[in-house]
Amino acid sequence: MGTHSGHGRLGAGVTAGVAGLALAAWLSGRRAARGTASTEPVRAARACHRSSALLAGSVLADSAMEHERGAYANPAMYVPPLMAALVLLAGAHGGGDARPQRHRVRHAVYGGAMATGVAGTGFHLYNILKRPGRWSWHNLFHAAPLGAPMALLLAGGLGLAAERVRHGRTRVPRLLGRPAGQALGLLVGAGLLGTTGEAALLHFRGAFQHRAMVLPVSLPPLAAAALLHAAVAPPTRRPLARWLLRLVRLLGWLGMAFHTRGIARRQGGWRNWSQNLFAGPPLPAPPSFSALAVAGLAALRLREKRA
Image 1: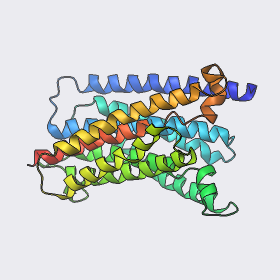
Image 2: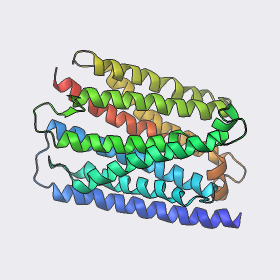
Image 3: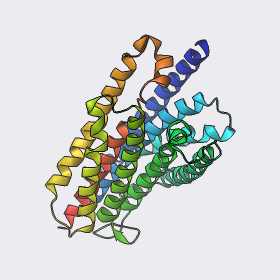
């Protein structure tokens, strides 16, 4: 217990330090952009930066805890928390930056995050397949989670999209040869479906013991379907998609409150936080839904701008 307590205090100190640096980065971005008028693409880009930062914060806390549980047996396990911290700082800075220019350092950080996410997915897949039973429910439940490195990949992708949108030289910014609102909507819709799959796996492991555990596997797919339809259909206002994404944004914070309650109900509650954070429901996971909903709303704004 003493070891977990010491590492838990260290982790809490590091998390607080990164949060302080993220606030400083956001203030730095605002100071640099003082007096600059935000256009619609830049406002959408800033929302995507904030989405990337929130998603990276979730990955940072989750990967730091899970890799601590694995005692950092492989030196490569230090890379994802470090890269997630850098994305958090880059996203915080970009969220406060109203200038219509790409930032080279942020751009490099986001690219590194995507490469780390791809490599991490390969490592986690290998971790599953090397176990007895290979591709089985037991290994999906208890081996390295596939969703974590994919979330870092997505955080980097959202950040790169934000840099491209703010740096667009045409009236309608484009991503990968498509209108930015359409490409971003497709990316976020796919991300919502993937995050739903991860939530379904963990809540199935928990036997859906609380009625509210159905919400993360029912509401986000509806929002994803509405967003994907808005991305491929002719541009027009989509109030249903907008309200569904707002509900998903709220769902992420509600989920965090439920997970906080789940930790409190374990033996020792929050007095034994250094143990129960590892054993209870994952506290950093639900805000991923809020992060993706923020980017989805930005995609809708860009899409509706063409209508």
